Image (cartoon, rainbow, N blue to C red; front, top):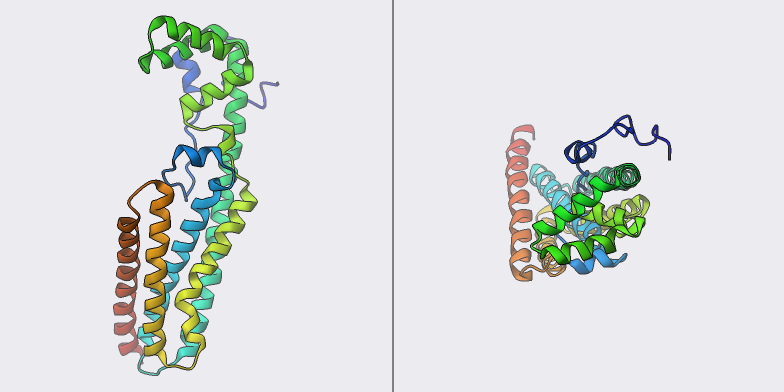
Length: 270
């Protein structure tokens, strides 16, 4: 592997353990990252659950808040068409923004893993003694007895792929199986965002008046917010009812603020 692909930091000059550690960069953090259980790390399907949950909740909260603000502004004119058009516009724009953002974020994480794994592999080949000592230090810090540390170290370093995988996990907290397809992540986020946006927007497609449509949109949105929060809590291993209530309060608070702003602005403008 050429040094050019790994950057100028990797040389054949004598290096200390601290100098080798400094050549690595901290991992990028996904804009959608949430705490996950060990089971999530082992499942390719569950690795995308966070995209669905957070895409859905973001689409629901942001579009519900936007719809509430526009509805308040046109409440006196009872103009459901304006609210519907605004809601659809917010939904499409938000889905594109969030989807593209997650694509770039996920892609950068995959590129980071590949680059750092290559750098770690090169370090192992050039400075094997230092890297082995780093493994010993990591295991010792976990509280393993000295004889166990040596046994584990030998088992880890005898296979290069296992050696690299161990170092990536222990140094940076990432494993190869945690990599996700940027295209799948983007698609799931966009679809989930649009689905979430349907709840606050759909009532305005019917000729029932702005006030009635907003009331129905609020009922649907609150129910969907609680459900999304409950699912998030279940996936994260947290109390589902607490997460559901928290998500609901956040969405309602956002909608209340935008409703008040829209009401004031609408009263002045119209």
